[in-house]
Length: 452
Image 1 (tube, rainbow, N blue to C red):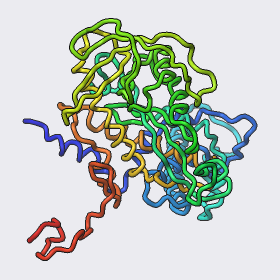
Image 2 (cartoon, rainbow, N blue to C red):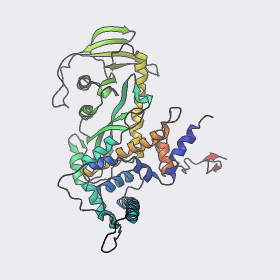
Image 3 (spheres, rainbow, N blue to C red):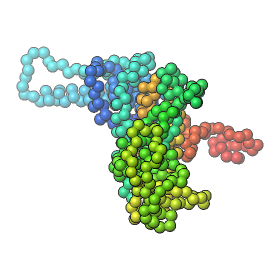
Image 4 (tube, rainbow, N blue to C red):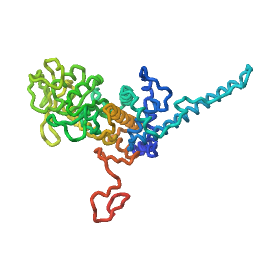
């Protein structure tokens, strides 16, 4: 009997419909990161522990209601759950002691032994509905711990052929913008200017991301103000790329400094030509397929403090034809003759995944406009949201990896459509299920939204 793939996936995420997103994300939450210690800071048995605070921040980022009040409500649920688990363990421990004492042949003098439940101070206290304590607890969570959460949220060694191509691990990179609150501290760092004059609009940040093809997870990101070069952010992000990586980028990244660094650190790249580049033909492999060398440009990039060392770079130049019938050129550092130019062209066509992926992350995690009111909390909010997105991707990956066929459509918007009132279409756009849309003359069935 052939397994029904849609039914199999639905059964895996059915729990979420009843609000069990808390349980699912808590199961994926990497508790090992809590071994991080901040020297000189005493916890003093606080009710708002670092563990529960970080978990609450994760759960809040997955909710439509991101208010502090809702966060405290979530914290109360987590606190009560952990309190119940601690009580259950203590009761089991006391029962074990009683059983051991009852079978012991040695009689002890004095008063009978008392078996008392002693909860940790952080669990003995009740949760206040005042949001001030939770707000301060968020401020105490170090950004280094949140960064570690993002790293631990990644899927390691994904068993998915789409993540790999001819032995390479494929990544996609691009940039976008996010809007922020108009506070004094945020405006100082993220103010938008036109010709050196401050804009009256809201502050905005430049978000540069690298996403892994196949898993859809965010591998790395950097945030800066809008007047920072995308290339400078991306240049720094290259240091964290794993060996045997392959980057698919748009023509903005077709510059000497980026290509040179990729070659130097052992990361391959495929980029289209944004203009005709001077080169020297080294070898002709076939029609529209050449090995070339490029020289260091005379005018070096100004966005980098120290330029790459000058010299010749050997690349492969491929002339391709778009689906519309227009010619375009790809440059790549892949020189393996066994990989055909058609394979490289077909690979590059998947670069569009990053456009959908970025929109998907921003829309589903609701980070088009960040809520925090200080630069420090902006970075925490963004990192938590991206880590949570990765954890949700983990849940989805775990639910489909054992199916006998590879998934072709994207399940992240299905996951959230099942769990929230927020509805996402395949292009990442938000819509309302019950919206009547344009006025119609004929009768419409409100259940199916179809003409009667």
